[in-house]
Image (cartoon, rainbow, N blue to C red; front, side):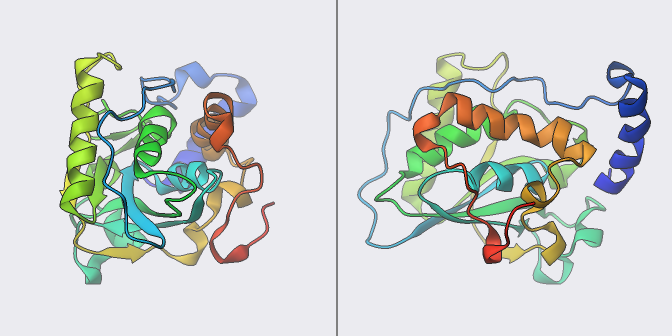
Length: 235
C-alpha cells in the first residue's frame, strides 16, 4: 500500500480518535534494549564503511540512523532488483525484487558495525514480521541486511542466531542476510522525509516512536541534530 493512500486513511482516524479501529500502525514487537553482538567484525580498513539495511518503509529507517552518532549518511534507496526498475512507482508494485532500503555510511572509529546492527534490531523494525512492516505489506517492505563482505555477513548471521537463542523476541527473526548486488538511491522527495515532515500522520504514528526509542535506549549513540542527505535543514 502506498503511503499517500495510508495518510488519507489515517486522517479521519486522527480527527475522530478511532486509531484502534484503523489499520495496524505498528509492528508487533516494541523497541527494546538488545545485547551487543558477541561476534565482532575484524578491524575494518581505514576510512568510512557502509551497510545497506531494509526494514520496511525507508523513511523510518533513514530517520533513525540520521540521529546516530558516527553515521555520516543514511541514504534511502532500492536494493535487490535491476537498475531499470529502481523507481518508486515500479517498486511499489512488489514485483521487482527490490526492497526499500537505506545505505548507512559510518565512521568505524566512532561506531562499530555491531552497534549499527544492534540499533537496527532494537528500534528500526520488527524483525519477526513476515511480508512487510507495520501497515506496509509486500516484498518491497521485507527486512534484510545487504552485506559488503563475507565478514559482515558472518557477523550479521551470528547476531541473528544469538538473539534467537536468547529469545530476545517473541518469535523467530525472519530478517534475511544477502550480499549487496546494487544500491539505487531513491527519488529526492523521499530523502530526509522524517526530518522534513515530522507531523505527517504516517511519520507521527509509525516512525517518530522509533526515533524516540533510539534516544531513550541508546543515549550514548544519540545525535539530536540529524545528519541529513544533502545538508537539508530539518523542518
